[in-house]
Image (cartoon, rainbow, N blue to C red; front, side, top):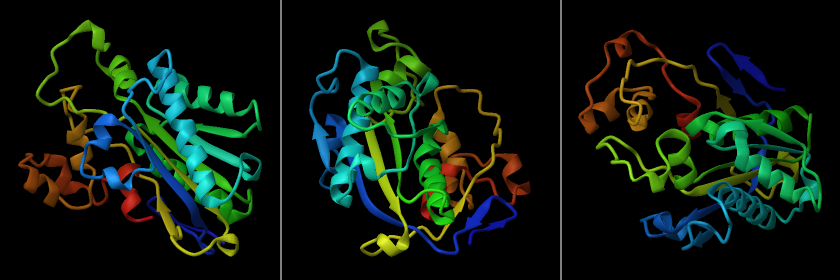
Length: 250
């Protein structure tokens, strides 16, 4: 039985397990130091699709497909799909779920937590499985550099100058298949999840998304390392964490 702790933490009495997981990425990510940890790398940023939104949908579907293969399960074994992306109306997620529904409809709970969506989807999937509301659940999240640029900054063909603080959104999708502990083949298990709160640090630069990621920690140490000035409000906050960093505690 799950126990809710004041502050947004849920302790899962019968921790569910992650039976399969995958990561599918684009060329830039595949050229990086984590390349060997990815299950799928495609040098084509469009993934053979006609739009960036369809490209992201393809990437998301690929991540789900690979995670199911590694878990030795199929779409018909999944009771609920918790998924999201960075686009308005979760466009890539909707396209991906629509295309997979041609073979087997997946009940979808669409999520939008920006960079915390993977942790959010995994947290909710774990709570649902542990409570017995569903047997198997999939947590799925994606982003695409080109679709995100059009969404949050400017279309690439506009040719706008990037600011020094502008981050590079990953072209990637990740998926985790959450199952009851009894049907798992071993760890990892999800023992607890924490849902974060929203705080305004007064950042005026709309392109500087990384600043808030640094601030959303339990300790100011990362800010000292990165040379970021500590906000005055930080001292008075006991817990200023977003769902994104809770992956460390799951």
